Length: 300
Image (cartoon, rainbow, N blue to C red; front, side, top):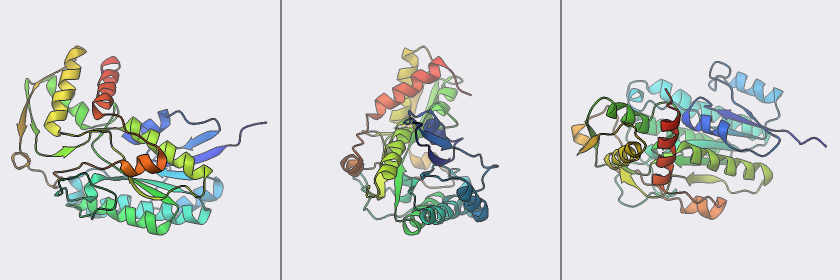
């Protein structure tokens, strides 16, 4: 007997997490539908409804977003259209279809002024437009489709697209010294590990209508500063014969940006381990895997 097809809609397929979702080892029968922005405009409610009318999706993973944190300060409408209205439409259609929605969110919903790891129940207070737009998306998802999970993550790294790790290796190829912010703390997190976690959540929600819902945090275990992360990247790269540089730690004030960043981006992962059995690996292991992959097959 042929396997039942399990169609899952994935938005943001060209991003770091989306690309890793495509590489995830899904069970037999799972079919990912990953339309480009030109193929599906999440801001077009009629187009989204038409897609759902044509395909019996079993779940949706929304990993797409407007992620230009600094540009968002001057492109407020664009940020909210992608990060709030898009999720609102997905929440509406998934609720009508009776299927779960898994939404990717961010540490930027917090102000970063706390000293402990942030729990899901801690008060939010975004510092800028990007964080505010992602928080609005969370609210839209949670109120629009109660059978949903919001997965907050932070400091995402992968061999794909532009990210801090790849930027550091590029800079090290051209200069002996790199100045990096050393007073912001967080957990470097593999997009591959995020994708695996999203798959775990989504498959459980498809199989069990009573699967846990709500807001969850996922980051790799442990924490460091951006400067500490840069030093680890260069140490790993040097061992493999790749580019390396000395790191000079600087303050946030010495590297001003249009959007403020949380000083503390550490997220507690206790809840997702308890409810979904996901135990994050150390961030150092995740970073080492990415550096090794880039060394073997350089990615533009």
